[in-house]
Length: 164
Image (cartoon, rainbow, N blue to C red; front, side, top):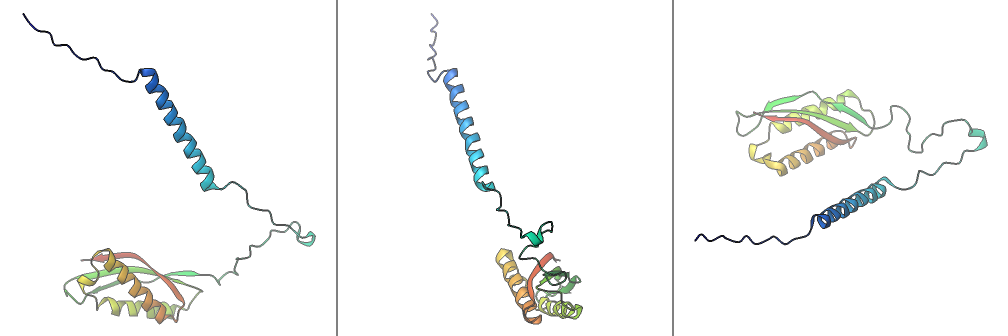
């Protein structure tokens, strides 16, 4: 005679219990998202600024507003293309922008450009490899730009860096 294997019946939560748990977890996720959004967005509106009667109808000027032409300025330097020191057959092309604390004469940007060109010619490949090499290169370039501009260059933004 042939023996018939008995398949053990699966015991587990019913479909109704699984559906209820799914709804509970979904409701908890929606609630946490709503609470997180409210926390990150902020609850109150900005406080209104009292207006003196003589200034009524005029738009109030923010306290940190500056006169035109006196704030930070961004100057894009001409692309720098040169070979590096070692290996000599490797070329580097770099496009940078300089952030000044106030508008500066174009001669200052030209001086920074020439100084960066001279600096790039002294680089060796092992100095700029990896993320830490890039960070050191950026720090060196920012330091040289700050020295050359007597502290007016606040940041140097490397837009393109290509080695061939």
